[in-house]
Image (cartoon, rainbow, N blue to C red; front, side):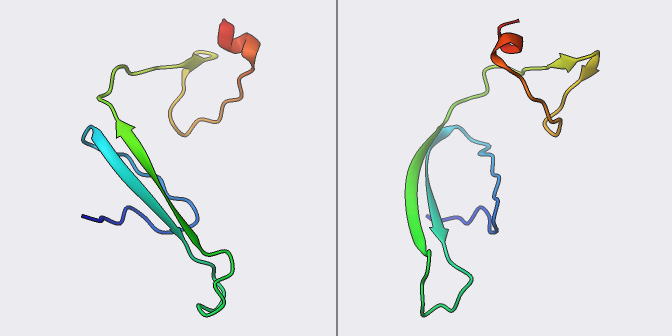
Length: 79
């Protein structure tokens, strides 16, 4: 069964139930439908595992969240 999960230039989706999903992407250009410039489609398989851990990161005493912008180099990551 096909279930649309989004539309637009950027789509974010989280699967609530573990399992194996096939995600199909269809791209349509904004030009006239008869021209079909840059149209295409692709499919990929996504394996969703159960959550194994929650990671909480603090920087300068402040807890970061999913909206926080962070740049980290290899030296900081090793620490």
